Length: 198
Image (cartoon, rainbow, N blue to C red; front, side):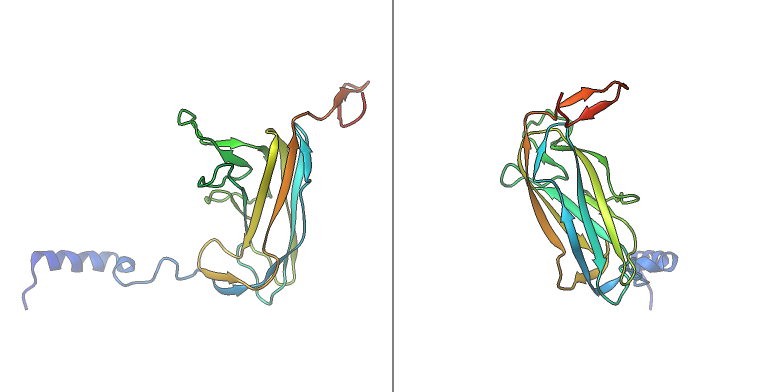
């Protein structure tokens, strides 16, 4: 049987790149199945003020019989306008002249250690062994007054066909940020004291 030049080219490419022509899938080593996680404690002050530091804290437990391969947490502030995409600790504006559509509600001073990922609004903090617990913290400073809802949800991995067993794996905080800044004064040593009476 004679092969056309086109078929010969396809066969040659398959010989050079077997993964693209029926070889092993790129996600062949990705985790799969159900994992059991639960948030045992969650806190974020419901009333805050401009320039006031606050900490969003989640305590996450692996309640199952399998190690969680990559604990990931997505945090999103509900949009101020229906139909807009949520943003992490921010809301999107409508001004097309802005370089970034997301306008911060909080400044993120520090997220969970080692949690940066390529996914928007998601922090991946590594494995969580069977029976282990980890506390995740986002240290923030409020910069925009108003009322907001900050939602969070867990995932056991960033890729693969994974699911979560029943448990507290998502939630939200309703937060009001007052327009008046935190009272501050400078003490005798030159240190700024916030929250105390002048």
